[in-house]
Length: 329
Ligand SMILES: NC(=O)c1ccc[n+]([C@@H]2O[C@H](COP(=O)([O-])OP(=O)(O)OC[C@H]3O[C@@H](n4cnc5c(N)ncnc54)[C@H](OP(=O)(O)O)[C@@H]3O)[C@@H](O)[C@H]2O)c1
Image (cartoon, rainbow, N blue to C red; front, side, top):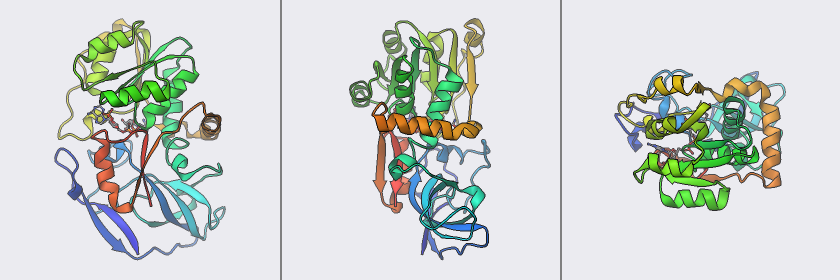
């Protein structure tokens, strides 16, 4: 059988288990030009929730469809040129055990790495951190880089890449324990608990020379506070808005935009990781080398069992993960 999680209905406010519905159907049969893939790892991403809010960089999810999501799997049967049984591939085929897909929708992985790395640090997560920080943020040695959701999948990679670039690195995360861990285990220079109150004051003391690059994963109050501490000609990398995805109605944006953007000559730039996929091989090779050398710790948070996908996604919005959260099947 092909077990599937369907997107059952649009949430009102936070997602709950009944946002999803379990179903079982027959395993699909690949047609000419297609490969049958068995899912091995499912990526849990804040974007899964954002896709329920309406059209983004892709169409909104429609109730009744298989829940969308990025996955890593193994080819079990191939009628597609260039793909053979046993190949490890990644793609966006959603929350299900099996999918039959044309070759153009599958990205074959050549890097011999653990599936836990291929689902995040050496794939979308790592590439988001790499291109977002280095290309959009353009950090220079000695800059202060602030990253929000710093203990999460993208944040842990951004902080460590910024250290490799010679920057002073500060993170924000939920809870003192996560903040201590960022400094102790990942080499951050400082970390601030955004939930503890006094956020702006805490950031002033963690960033005594101001902020040159703010890598924004959250929007919301951290963006508000960061704007006021940006240095002249600073760069704000708009990667995501996780504080505003799992809510009924997103809060209005910061009052300091555009005022501070003008007076401080800031550059605020959004990006989607796929924009950079023509340089994917270069980035994957560098990330793999950094992880192999131990210069970057790939932090993964693996949950076993397909049936746990909904609660694993809900947990992302409660900050229950450290590093890349994925479900192993
Ligand atoms: N632009 C792109 O191409 C691209 C690609 C991938 C991801 N993204 C974006 O990157 C961001 C991080 O994604 P990720 O996959 O690395 O997820 P993640 O950081 O591993 O998980 C989400 C984290 O967000 C934090 N969080 C939850 N609710 C929050 C709130 N109300 N305020 C502040 N923080 C909150 C939680 O940590 P705490 O314990 O710290 O609260 C949680 O661990 C997201 O905004 C995502 O949409 C963008």
